[in-house]
Amino acid sequence: MTKFRKATQQIHLWLGLVTGLIVFIVSITGCLFVFQKEISDLVHKKTFFVQPPAQKTQLPFSYLLSQASTALGKDKAINYTVTYKDPGRAWEFMTYKAGDPKALTYFGSLAHYESIFVNPYDGKITGHYDYKYDFFNIIKYLHWGLLLNPDYGQYIVGYSTLIFVFMLITGIILWWPKKWSKTNIKKSFTIKWGASFKRLNYDLHNVPGFYTMFITLILALSGLVYALPWFQKTVYVIAARTFEQPEIKYEVSTPAPFTGKPLDRIFIESQKLFKETDRIAVSPPLSEEAAVFVTGIRGKEVYYDFDVLQFDQYSAKLLNRRNYDEMNAGEKLSAMNYDIHVGAILGLPGKILALIGGLVAASLPISGLMIWLGRKKKNKKQK
Image (cartoon, rainbow, N blue to C red; front, top):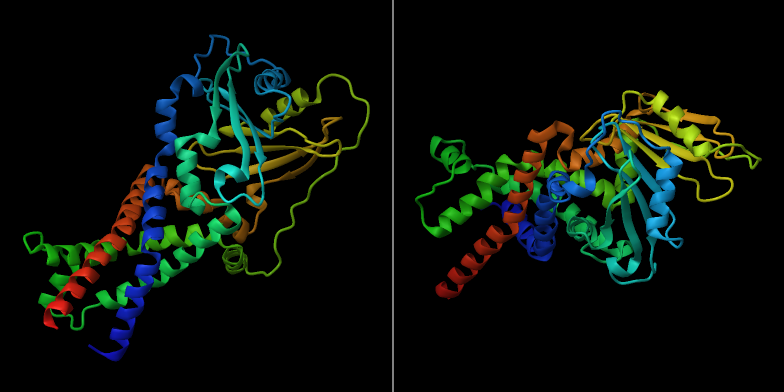
């Protein structure tokens, strides 16, 4: 064994021992989260879906908002709403508030995170959903920061993932056949299922790791975009070919007397402008000068293809429109990052690939640990 290969093996080993548990947790929770939408829609069918009447006439947006506000109570302001083009979907009215910024865990750092689902045709509440204690949301935050306060949990996960990326590279170096003979090629590319446990475990560490290398690398790198701000900025600069970060323009509403219900006028105008969108998300103003943000999302299963409108909350005048097509390459890549990370960018096949990549990534620390323990036991016997 050359000095370089031996050094690579030691680096691969010790980095794996240090980060193995975190990589396993992050990978297995990622696998659980891939199909969360499909599973949630099935489990909470009565909450998320409604039976539309023949006329399909929706009640005014402001009335549905007031119904949701009443159900939540005065102490929980609605921050975000999601309406659907699909006539069979209930509309979601969400409230979110951060907790103690110095809290140790996710549960303390989040005051509340709830949604009321409303039938848009009769205004009846179809369900009250508490995301704070929802299984998939807990899985998401375990994946995101080990259920710790994001101020340090996300960095623990982020730098562990960065080490994992480095380990993927060292793993390929160690996998690479010394000679490309027929025998070595067969050993490197196939699993010997009838071999001893030791050999089988070795093959299960190397061969699937090689075949899923590209998938796991994409999953890891897209995860780093969320976990490490400096990495996100680097990806943006490379894609956008500029060091200038995009400036988000926040319009200001001009306080003035108004007649009627501006939110209803805003929503109706948004529906006209967003005829081809699958979802329309409205962020009600939380201050006297804030504009009303309305986002039109085109894809049914993805989030990246969207346009954003800003309206004056008093006059319902359109103040600004930012289309997805107007974004530079860096902004578009950033918008795509979630859909890339969960595989949704490629639809069902992409999600299946993400699941397979996550399962292999979760298995690597286990099979790697077994290889190390086997070698340690062998060395003791030789002594």
